[in-house]
Image 1 (cartoon, helix red, strand yellow):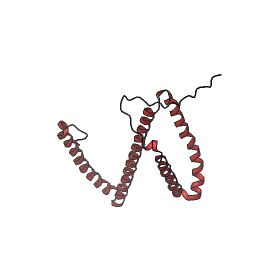
Image 2 (cartoon, one colour):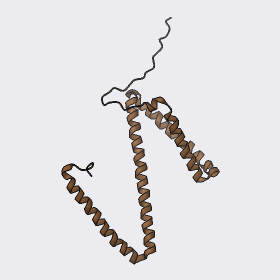
Image 3 (spheres, helix red, strand yellow):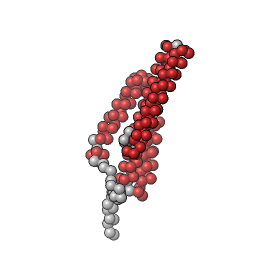
Amino acid sequence: MPSVVSAGRLQEANALLRLASSATSIVGAGLAGLVVAGIGAGWALAFDAVTFLVSAAFVFQVVAGGGVEVFSVMWDTAMQQQIPHHRLSRVYSYDALGSFVCIPIGLSIAGPLSGLLGVGGALVFAGCVVVVATCLVLTVHDVRALRRTAPGEPVPIHEPELIPEPSR
């Protein structure tokens, strides 16, 4: 709680947390009694199992979504800090093009692969491809050495040196 609420409001926050916890315990127990009395203990347990399944799916979605968002923030920050501003839109365009080109390729491979390996086998294979691709990217020194630049630090400009044309 101290990481969410200031020290001056800690007692109020803890009181609200305990109030919510106690209220849900009381209301939940009463609701469970009504469900058992209304539809029977077996169906009540089945309903409870379904609510746990829904909760687990929700938590999985939140965690997966959080991971995607963390990656997206880091990717955008790296792009904006490492690519010169006058080239950024072009690099973003190539990034999007590469991503969108791979979608139909992956979809065209997924069907035959799941027919060959089964759905579970195809998912395991796809997971292995992701892990191997990630490990291959990590073998590149510049990727491992990439660091966030300090605020206000200029974007590095890696312009190729132009070779002067020979004089005639």
